[in-house]
Image (cartoon, rainbow, N blue to C red; front, side):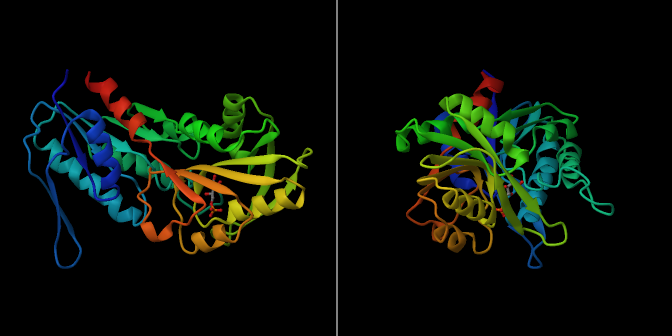
Length: 305
Ligand code: R5P
């Protein structure tokens, strides 16, 4: 087995600890110090020479700080001559900016990929990218994991009836919904969502094609950010006659007043993963979190075994 260390940035220490526990190791020692003006000064306090180094960091809020952390940690580690360095990014923030939506904008996901490469990460392990094609933005190998099986297992616990449908709240999520529908042996419907380019985070859910009356709708999405997509699609589904709505999403961004919006939405249960460290205050009784630590630990194990 390869000699390896798992370091954690500050974005999701509970998940990093859980992964370390499953691998039967302790997290690597790092001090993420800051100068008085906020400037970051990471200090790797372990010998990394000839070792396989993993750095776990979710690009969650404040994402720019978290990205800078993994970049500077990368530079600090590579100066210690490791065998290789692998970025473990459970949530790749900026992934929604994966194309030029209008002239004058960056393709930010591509820039983020570059950041990791210039910091000398030789591989990336990530989970449920907003768009599979983002893998192509990286010059280095990417292991793109999915939480779908874990989420499907949760659905089986709460939805007993076969009278259910899998719903993608937008066309972009069709593949994701199709995979879940296949895993659960259920039909799928796709809703049409409009996003206003001049108003960030504002969406409207539109048409439902197909008969949903009397069914349980299982909405699957990659991200819940403001909660707008879920609240709007759940309402449209309810208006169309579904009896209950269960929501599955990998990344619980839960920005701004998402909690309030979701509490007010006609949703019976929401299951997210711990790809993002969601603060306790953002939880409410119908929101449940499952852990992706097993799939991350397994991916790390496959590299080092
Ligand atoms: C966008 O296409 C994504 O797949 C999600 O639907 C979106 O990020 C959710 O954002 P919000 O919760 O703000 O509607």
